[in-house]
Image 1 (cartoon, rainbow, N blue to C red):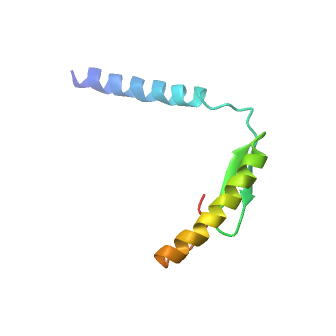
Image 2: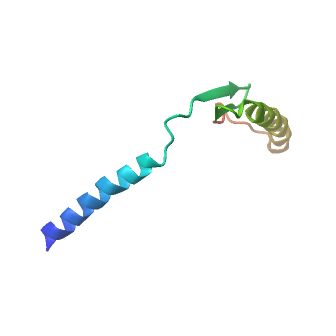
Length: 77
């Protein structure tokens, strides 16, 4: 019974890993837009959206840092 359970777990682990890998599109080429406080990662075709997001994130960061009197020591990914 224990061997059957271990076999089942091993098969599940192997198959779940393959299923996850199948969902990743290997044709994506990723880039990063960096600001003082953020690193925005995006794939081809979304550079303009990433730049707008970076500008909004910096604006909100300034407001929240002033409100909470604290800011992260590292860039937010």
